[in-house]
Amino acid sequence: MKAVQIAMMFAVGLGVSSHVLADEALAKAKNCMSCHAIDKKLVGPAYKDVAAKYKGNAGAVDTLAAKVKAGGKGVWGQIPMPPNNVTPDEAKKLVTWILSQK
Image (cartoon, rainbow, N blue to C red; front, side, top):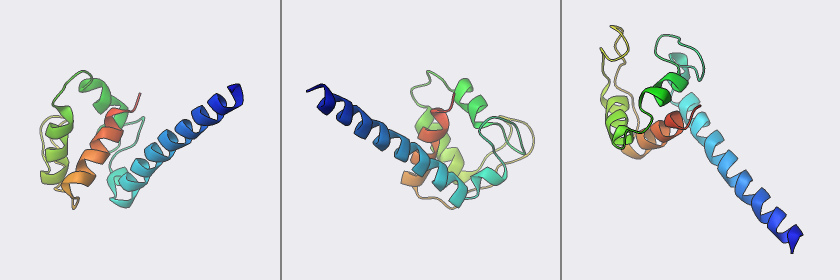
């Protein structure tokens, strides 16, 4: 019985880690990582800083997904983020992954 529980926890862990990796892969595929990094500011803010700023904000996914899609400026400085060629679903996946950074 214990072996089954361990196997199930391992399988869940693989599913979670592959989901996180898939969203990081999406960020790389959409060139997000050209201007952003997980843990340091490049042209735009570090994803860890974005996650910290929006922690506990229930509407953050929708708000930030709209900004990813349409672009924006002024929240993190004067350098604008251009609109990105992503679907609404991709934008939400990216933002959900970004907000999971610690």
